[in-house]
Length: 482
Image (cartoon, rainbow, N blue to C red; front, side):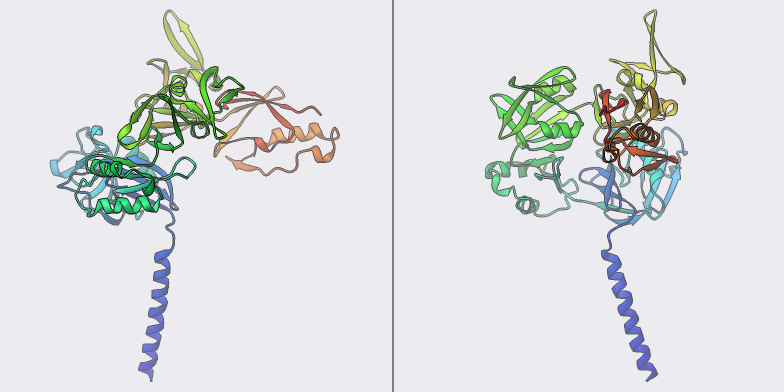
């Protein structure tokens, strides 16, 4: 009887363990995770299943492939020693660079002494990154962070609004996949564009996908620095026009239509505009003339690329000009942001000097006056984020708010402008007794930033924005008159 009891208890325990094990297995992943995708040569840093950032990497050659599978961060090293050739840590000749993140015995994510190899199949199985990128991710991941190495040739991408899927197919560099053509057909049917593609063209694209990255789309797809924006493009005569709303959303800018003229304008420049089916389209050549960059059309896979050497987004809006030296000491043009940071440009005897309350500022002369992002951060506290994968830089400058001849320091949080709660309190005091109670702003939720209270500017019902600069770095407010 006792033996039967033990067996029953053991079975119950086994069932409980099995239940909780299976339950745990289907739980969504929480925390950070590294995903390394071999065909695209990209590393994706995830958190709670959301993409934090993507990085370009070099992976193993065909005869020394990067091993696929599920791993975890086993060890981390600064200035690792390269034992194979007895090269000390910190040496400029060390092929492991300045950081090592091991995920399998003899395999790791590391820096390198050959930045030209990034985005290629070049290593003996390890994963190489730019020094800037590996130093950044080194600080973001801990021991036991999950690492997934995958080999997926087919990837579906949606446009800027999360719609209109297209299919990317990467060459089978390791020659590991079977029946790729069949899988392409299945995926195109799954995303609903198989029947809208010409069969001859589809077969030609399949053949091309054995040699290079190929896009399968039923219409022209529009990209900015490899970021898929839209399929809403029209061809009139020999000119291409792109959906205006999609461009406005990506660059966070606003065009203004000139009624009855067939044009819109921004920053004093005119662009040709067409209205079709209640939608507005702008000429891609005019867009290029205003914003810079260069368009190229790839007829083989219906792709129009709008490429910038490097793209700068200041407070989420495009800053004209290119960043310099993206992978080392990145620099940006300073002219458009000088006033908001209190930087004076002094010309004397054919020389230029930059000065502020923080002292003299080191600068560089290219086609404009440039300053290192790191110096702007050190002296003015700006924040920045460099995306080497898509060749763009995000710069965030907290706005100066001017209200009743006083200056306040605003904050930018998730693309929204927040102002000190004291502005709200001054406004409430000024309104007391002058208007009906329902006209006065109701209680506004505040957030704490560095211990201080801030409220969202756009929740103010009785304050208007009198004017602002185009990057929201200086904003003048005034109280509405009743």
